[in-house]
Image 1: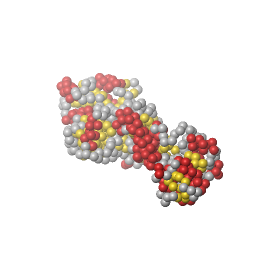
Image 2: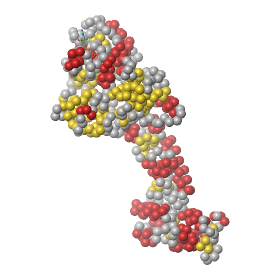
Image 3: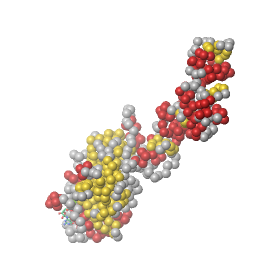
Image 4: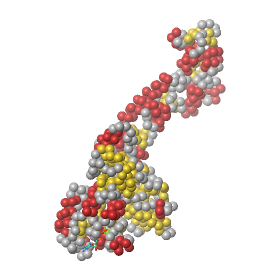
Length: 593
Ligand SMILES: Nc1nc2c(ncn2[C@@H]2O[C@H](COP(=O)(O)OP(=O)(O)OP(=O)(O)O)[C@@H](O)[C@H]2O)c(=O)[nH]1
Ligand SMILES: [Mg+2]
């Protein structure tokens, strides 16, 4: 299916032309027919060629209903621009063109209608001139009369050529901008809209914006025909389970879960804006019209804060209007849906400079480079990365993060420094907990510490991150047993496990010897194993005793038994840290004082 929106000044013959092309009545309301004027959006369809259907979204031309007009064209990429031969270019011709240009609509046909009432030549020439310099410059023009039928066949052919030349809808998640909601007896709530991307299937769970509710698709119709499934582009009526009619209305959106972040703050590039914009405007995007706070960052950059969350992606276009004024005040391109806070003096100016250097559709590497590190799913929800995309080249991926290689290097170095500092300050527990390490090293997420530790040649185990990697790999039960012993020794550094403890844990002499080689434990004497930092801590504690000191004073200071205290003192003697004075007393050597 193809979807084409109409555009053009009030009363120029848009609806009449749609009726002539489709045989359907786009003006749905009695009031519209009585007043001979379109108020709300109308929908009609026909087959221009083969079996493929073309649906028209017929918009009102009157200035008062421009919000309805924008809701109609918002999700549509092709337009039938109507100008009356007898009236020529008028005010809403210009306003509609400004909106289409800002939305970057590039596909269209110029229909100069009512050409039975006047020579269409001057109106065509005038319209072409106005279209020049916009995205619709050079579109084919057709003179037509809906009354005499003159030119209608040519218009059909031109519209058919237009639809054939339309680019396939960009692959992407399902998003349907709601333009109507009503209740059908026996079915409940039905919404209609233009599905501009993705696929919807009966039974799907979708997210409703802005409420964030999950709703289930109970039934689908496309052009009044029941379907099980519909893909973009299509006009769709969606029957929703468990939703009251007043809970959904025009401007809401149904989207695929996990595909969009609820955007409440975004940085945009302004297109064709005045130097300064009012601080409060209305934002139009898709079928939505939402109050928005505008903060100018620079001449063509602004931060927008919509009053309700919007499901949108980087690179999308929208409009800003002053509801009081009679024109579009600016178009915009979404550049960042996760903008950084602006706290310090000069932040806004720096941000404007950064935004000026961004492309409308950044690559993943550019986004990662700009942010240093970003969650993969955040880029998916920003529309920069598709869920199935392979991890991009030139970016480090770990733990669900995409990290800039320069930042990765900095983090690796910082982790090394933090681990060294910690080990020096805490000789008895050389492992630092991952979240503490992340905090000290300025690493965004503690879940990255494991990968960074591996990169840095460090070890992450139950005792935290530490620097001992000897390449010895223990079987899992042995590793667990050693971890248990280390954890116990971190709490009570001199409570060396006894022979029964070691036997219960399944640790043989061979395992313990390997643990010593690996630097996990040190052997004080046969059967007495402590953490590598234990002698330094032991010395620190006996240094605090009155000198000289006895074995039982040392034992008390270490809170251990003679089984450990005696060989540990002998170990300190051998290291030259302590010296025996006589059978009972020892003293710290000069070197260790
Ligand atoms: N003579 C003549 N009259 C036409 C032609 N097309 C439309 N009209 C008349 O022009 C008037 C306006 O036509 P509409 O189709 O309602 O115009 P519109 O652009 O849909 O108007 P809005 O939706 O209110 O913006 C009606 O009285 C139509 O009968 C045409 O080709 N020839
Ligand atoms: Mg009309």
